[in-house]
Image 1 (tube, rainbow, N blue to C red):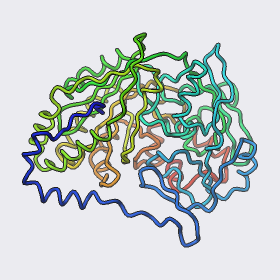
Image 2: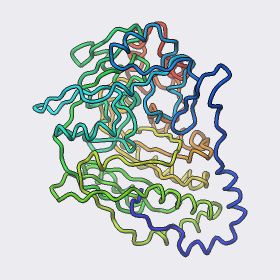
Image 3: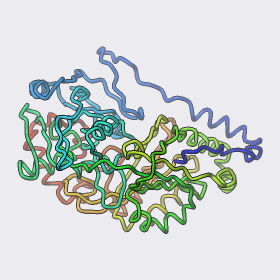
Image 4: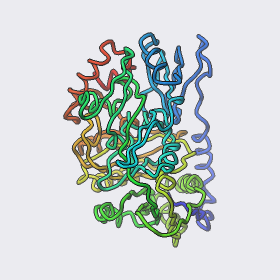
Length: 465
């Protein structure tokens, strides 16, 4: 989003003096959602994901100190066994009445190779900690997701990605992994050793076992220049192929009902460091909400007021190591649906997404995110053998999100989109098998390492069939 805030309402606020009834309606709709009980009747404590959409009361919680403890506990653990990272998945991947398994104590670097720029990392390491840890040994990841609070294991399990022409999702940089299987066996996997398990479990939804250690192919540390500028949405949609090819990392965020988008690019530079300013994205987001609240039922006026307030916004520039600039703070909770489309379809589908929202979902105010991801060969990767353009839509955590399934998901599916594993979708094994060429092979590998289904909860039973 725009990182230098200019108050959106300004003089346009004078045009909203008659909007009291709308404000009252919004105050009612924006009340805090009812929270589940902190303790259930059996005395079990509540677990909830970041968005608040999913929760559970696990019978057992475990946080093994090392791989050996993890391997010893799995065979006798209450089922289903579900690994949990930072809880940033919006789907029901984690909820369990059995064992909730945290990898928070399995963190930090294990080893490094400066010649090949590889590093072996414990799977519970948070991405926010991995950036500085790699920088300390002169390495960096080419791409990071928008939010870096996830564990490495959670990011890999769901196919988490950043953006960039020719840049894969995080799992595309994995050269080897150690997986503790449900029976306590430790499996070492790579392209040469147990390759079927390697290809199936790199994006494994936490259903093949528990990741304990990962080796990443990184690159030497560099300095990048981040530029954020406000542009016309029609312009960026037309120029997107050129922009994506020109910059190392490029993405844009469509600001619905404004005709404007925030274009964000990162490129390697030798210019002196100019640190990023404190994030004010949250303030900007709430300005967009206030604009929605005032002009929800007059889209034309909403657009004119936004364009008036956004006129002459300055370009924001920061120069620093990439891990400091690629990810952002997102304190405002939300719900998200993201699909990954064949790259040639991205711009056309995004135009229709914008049109449907601005016609039939007038309460939407969150930006629509567009990114680009290179193909890879992980069997359950949404980017399997296909360069993809991702489109993500969002709703504030306090507000309904059913419009995503009614208006947007059918459009994604018609275009052959594959869902982000950690974000909202309605697909089951039948639909997924048609989208993933190696889905049946991944199912077979999963059954071979977990024949009793100890790692699958109800959501994963739907996914795998």
